[in-house]
Image 1 (cartoon, rainbow, N blue to C red):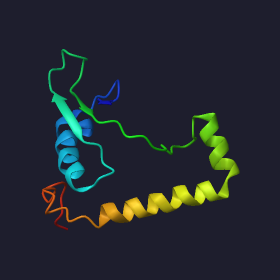
Image 2: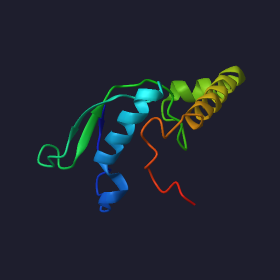
Image 3: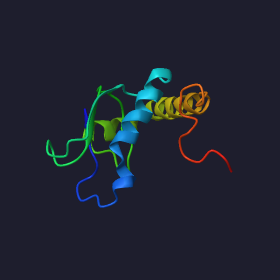
Length: 114
C-alpha cells in the first residue's frame, strides 16, 4: 500500500512521511497488527510528494459511515459481529497501550514530559 500526504496539504509537518515511516518501522517490530513499512521515497518528483510503501493489511476500516454495502449490512444486522468487532478493537487498543514504548525506540516521540 502507498501512503502519501493528502492532496492539497499545505502544512508539511502535519503529514511528515519520513516521521511516519520511522515510527511505523519501530512499532511494527513490536506490535504485530502494525503494517511493516517497506520503502520511503523523499523525491517529490516521483509522485508529487514524499511517500512510503508498506505491506497491505486487511481489516475493517470504521469511519463515519461504512462504505461497502455488504459490510454495512453485516454490521447492522448482526449483534454477534458488532460484539466481535468491538471486542477486537478494545483488545488491540489495550495491547497497543501496554507496549513498552521506550524499549521499542519510541521514547522520544512527542513530548513525554508533562
